Amino acid sequence: MTNRYSRQIAFAPIGADGQKRISKASVMVIGCGALGSSSAEMLVRAGIGSLTLLDRDLVELSNIQRQCLFTEKDALQGNPKAIACRQALQRINSEIKITAHVAELTSQNISLKIGEPDLILDATDNFSTRYLINDYAIKHSLSWIFASCLGSRGTVVTFQANSGYCLRCILGPKPPSGTIETCLTEG
Image 1 (cartoon, one colour):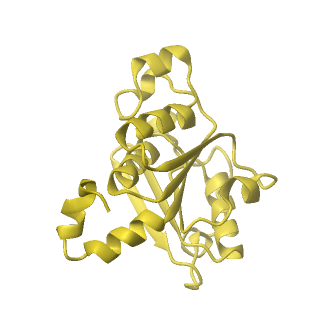
Image 2: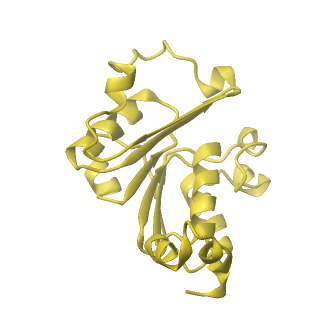
């Protein structure tokens, strides 16, 4: 361990053993918008072992005020969020293995894109993808975090592998498209 993580190691709930576990852990972040990019930044600063990013979108000027890793240059060049996020994170911590996928998560590519990380962080903005992640996590006994922000509201739920509850247990069937508020309409 380098001096880089000395403050985390000094913090008793983490300590040296906890920092070693962090440095060996793999996390998949799906969605590199405001929530995903901020979470990815904290994971990289904490010294996560490997991080995989997945997002289909390009950086836009309307993202800059809340998506902290992106710049005007990223938006003007139309850079993919996953790539711009990876580049910014590598400038923060070059020791971390960071993989970026510019893709939409589908039932056809989910196994290839996600694999079996220690944790999946869902920072997406649509229920189709969230339910896809839920079903995949159940099938592969993976822990995952559902996180969402809309307007001034936020929701976070952690689903432990094999816990006996899931997103469908809490929310019921997937809502029909067009019936739920979105970031585009509500901010």
